Length: 149
Ligand SMILES: [Zn+2]
Image (cartoon, rainbow, N blue to C red; front, top):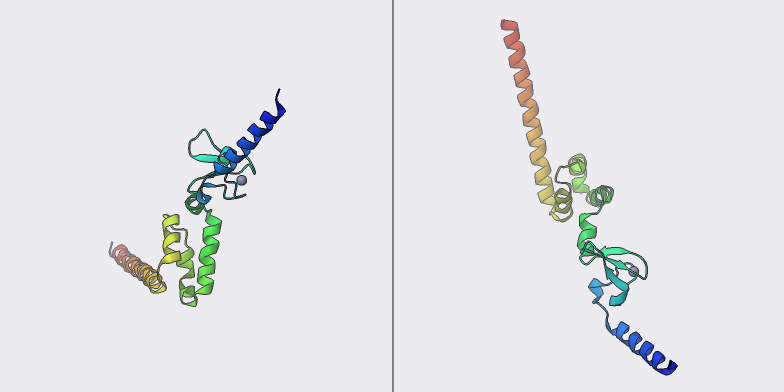
């Protein structure tokens, strides 16, 4: 066996490996591995496993990271925003309320202008006040009708 040609082949392989790199955006977000051979597509066709550090990630990992950001992180980010924005303080409970469209609500809270958030919170307060008044009136009506029968 010709060791020199083995060496040569190894050298060639090393060069090819260095050249076969993916773009920064597609590399491993954890250890910055960019050599294609070290980044293996998983069977699901969506995720990539980094052979260098063992991380599994998706190409749009930044987006994914955001969408899968857990509820606790979202909650804390909103708390921080309120802490930094005294104008929002009176609406803390509304902003942090467990809204159904959680992700959407969070995104909106984080980017909407403060005035818009206040307007939204005020309209909820207003609806709540109206609903309360309505139920109070209805209660009185029922009490009145009960008295009549
Ligand atoms: Zn890695």
